[in-house]
Image 1 (spheres, helix red, strand yellow):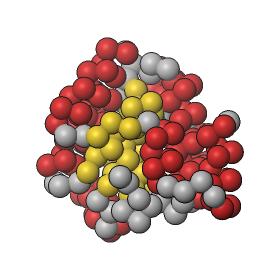
Image 2 (image 1 turned 45 degrees about the horizontal axis):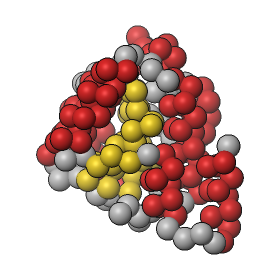
Image 3 (image 1 turned 90 degrees about the vertical axis):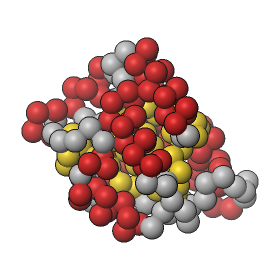
Image 4 (image 1 turned 45 degrees about the vertical axis):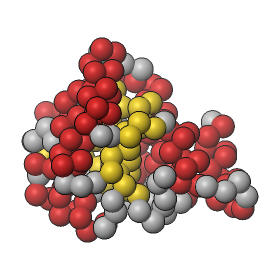
Length: 180
């Protein structure tokens, strides 16, 4: 199971017009918001990327607001791992379990997940927080990542796994997030 001390949340390319055109866009955005808020409470670091922001736009405003002063890693490679800055930042956190969310499941999420697995990371794919422009491509990406060794999870499952105990202020705060 994942734990706050070993886990990092990776958000891939939740940008501009693309974020509005993916399958179940509103649900995916809501789940990503929950992940960000819960990770902030549980002290899980967050790393996020933007694919060619000059052309695709920046991270959608509601998420960018929650991410606060964090700076995105800009990239032109489909796999985040193909960008030196990304790999340097990822390694600096010294976390082995990577919770992966974002877009598009069959392209950037898929290629990043496979390379992370090749580098020895444990990939936990948040299946209700990833998407593609079509449901078929989203589903194919999820299946291929799972077949390669990625561990499927959901927003709620991963948050409660990070939380582990149903008491205290953190539990109360996270419970509010889940119920929204």
